[in-house]
Amino acid sequence: MPTLDSALAHFKRADARLYAAALPHRKRLPKKLAGSRSRDVLFKRLCRSVTSQQLGLAAASAIWKRVETAVKEVTPENVRRVPAAKLRSCGLSSAKVKALKAIANATLGGSLDFSALKKLPEEEASLMLVRIWGVGPWTAEMFLMFALGRADVFSTGDLGLARAMETLYRLPRGVSRERLSRIAKRWSPYRTYAALILWAMRDAEAR
Image (cartoon, rainbow, N blue to C red; front, top):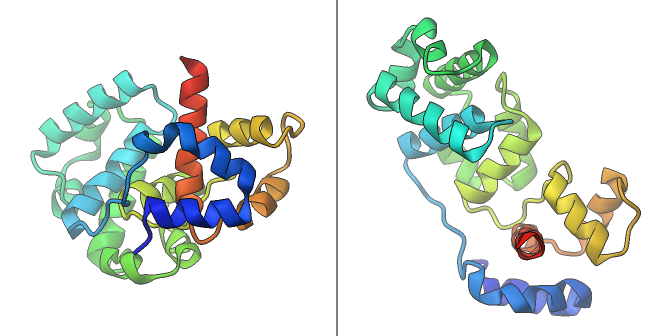
């Protein structure tokens, strides 16, 4: 099982600059990645990720609490059953309501299989998620990292990660995703840990 120690050992060999950047943040990084949750917990996490898109933390939290109250228990059956108007009254946009309904339908119809997601390679798991209306690449990548605990996921579309890489590798601002992806390849099979290190760097700079 991938661990922080095995990731750092790999970075020490493959990318001394990232390894050095990780050391000041080592105590803040998880020793193991969390995962292996039930279908309903994973469904709820994915719905919450979609709800939170393009919102600040406080607004996303407030809307999600209203969704939980409206649905009672966030399961695929309940989300499919609750009227769209009731979800919109929680503060969700029509697009996000459509996305939650699509996730519920995909789960109940079998095209979204959370058990299979746990076993598929990262790229195939991401493809299964983005086939669902309203689930984009960034949401899929965050879900794989934080809900499933997949070790080899990296989001070149995440602005915080891009800025951290620009700083660490002295890259021009707005560098292409292709170049970021080429750099990130050297971190495989521990790209999730690399992302956690880069986010920790950004957090430290913001203080």
